[in-house]
Length: 170
Length: 291
Image (cartoon, rainbow over all chains, first blue to last red; front, side, top):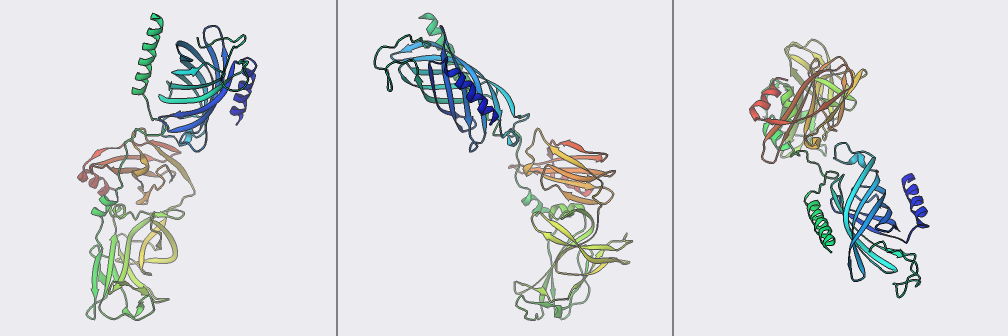
């Protein structure tokens, strides 16, 4: 839980810099695990920095927590959505490593992921990602929703002008 | 636009390639798994001998491996206490060799370690398919054959069936010219001597190639001629200063046998990496014969 607390603090710290914050579900195809994630998006001129934590709870075959930072590089705009390539580096606390048949399984791990995602460009932004963990060689799917904190139209989908909004996905 | 297309192609190819290269290493093992050896052991184990006891019967009955048994009809009863009339059937299993104990899966494990056995026998009696009991305070006379007998031994009785476990009793098998003689109960019993387990070292087992959960693993202690099944497939305490042989055996879906054997002098804790290799039935039998 110490790692979870630290990760949440990082996310909260990022909150003040974030344009979007939200969460969703994570599904690891190979380990057949489902987890929950929190993430923020901090835009820069050419890409977005995305601190994220993902927790795969006890009912999964693999119980673990990832905390890391990703980079999203948009390269295509389709109507109101942006398609982006992503890279992500994270620390992985693998809680039940001791029951895994994998050789040299251990609690502390570092993971790197690459992938592809799509996100809408409104005030409430659903997103979906396909990611590949190059350390464990596992594919996972992420779906969730992000709230655009810079959107000035209140709750609900973006309905009009946005003031001083950086556009990380374009 | 050109750059966008290029990135799209690269990313699409990366995604497609990543699908090809996924691994379930964290939840599935690439180690070879095996089937249960029960059917193989059953096909090789000593047959249960049957003796029809009638008015012409003489004492002792002699099993094919030499066990002598004397039993009085009047000492037997049905489960409800009724008396038994001739004829009735006596069934006998004799296990004298290490190989036979392995095949019958009646190794020398006790509730608090292991013992050295000079012979294991199972005696049961039946009348019209009903298993008979001994009347209270009655016993049967059993003499286990051993031409090298030179001291009294303890009587061990079966404690658990699965896994097979013995328990030392306060009764004795007395040293005789023929072997060991005692008055025992029906069921499994053995003449043996406990092997001290106060000064031991831990042997741990692992394998990078084989899933040991379905592998039959045994520890043979040379000086005590004791065969112990490693029921947890992971570790066992072995007596310090003793020479032991670890023997592992397995069978796959195609009935191909595999084995691993190593002999060690126990001078401290030991980690053994098990790697099973193919072996023929004849070769495996030969290994067990030589224990």
